[in-house]
Length: 294
Image (tube, rainbow, N blue to C red; front, side):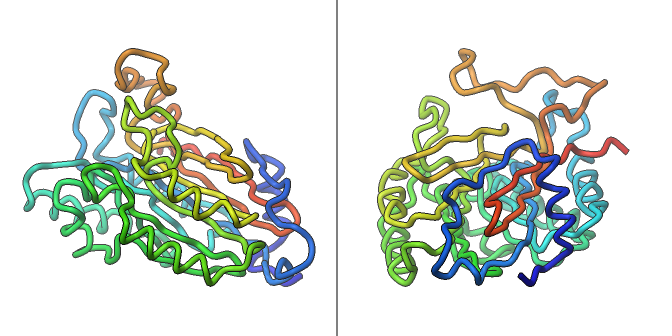
């Protein structure tokens, strides 16, 4: 099998990963042989522009995360930011300044294939208008080495919906797929009701899942909840990524959704990025990458 990078590096990733999900994701036969090993990196919830007690190093955390990823022995095929690139502001001018500064901070990334997804902090207050000026479409698809990626917007609607127009677009896209195609969905909010009391849900997420359910090889990567979390809906797995601004408590574990106090001795505890290895023989292998302090 031809691979996009040294297979030994992929196996090394798998050997030290925190979680591996392989069962049933890539059935034998059919189009499976078209998939080649590759890996990508997921950033989430960078919240550029945040200033507060939950992260006293907020002005520098993102640039350190960029340096962490640039230091990987094998560069990822691409990088995806799963929302809340910037911290919310009511000031449209400030919103654009934060989006502009975010792009400047990540510009040193060695990998130039970078994909973006809006979060509610980026897009809910103006239905994504400023976000689109800097990053383009709120939802779209792309293909990479035999895997079909679907980017969904469940944040620009202030009610936290995907909405009928996007659902129709998704249905039309899926009609072009075979039942055993490999499909990865990227979104910001969870597509299932993780904890609606804390806005950890998508209002019409069940409709999205109904559209995806006939396809046997679907996995969802999302952000929003500022912690690693794994869930299964039927045969579809959902994986949340850690934040790059501050962690949040487990769903429903305390009365309010507030971050733990900042720990100067361990400033990036429970924060970081994620490397995702993709292989037809091993499925998806996840490795959490802590932010380097230096």
